[in-house]
Structures are given as C-alpha cells and as structure tokens.
Length: 66
Image 1 (cartoon, helix red, strand yellow):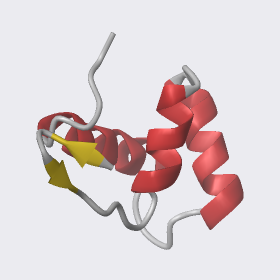
Image 2: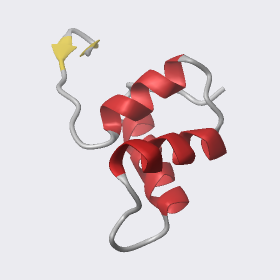
Image 3: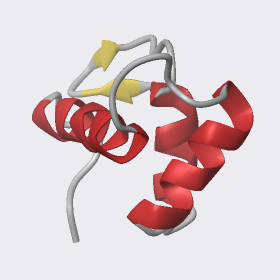
Image 4: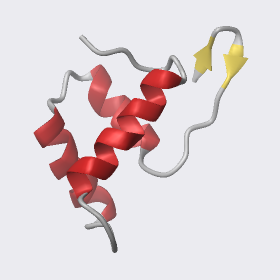
C-alpha cells in the first residue's frame, strides 16, 4: 500500500482487513471472514483482536472510519 508517499507492507490479518474494508464489510462480517481465513485466535476474543487491528490501521492512516 502506498500512503503519504510511503510504501507500507501489511502482514498478519491486516491485508484481509484492508481488502474487506474497501468492500464496505461490517465489523461482524469482518470478524467472521478473518476467522474463516485464519482460524480462531488461540487466545483472546476474535472481535476484540480484529477491532484492535482496525484501530492500528486507522492510526497509521491506512483506513478511516465512516
């Protein structure tokens, strides 16, 4: 992804979140999609972990909330 003149490489679940967000996927659908692709997290709540990853992408300026 190119953002603010910088090339950024996304890892982990971030690329899937970024693609889903571009398609307008809601949070509950996003969590289901992430679990389907990557499996359930070994620890923690999937919804909270996805929300944290989304927050990180927003903080980095790669996503914005609408």
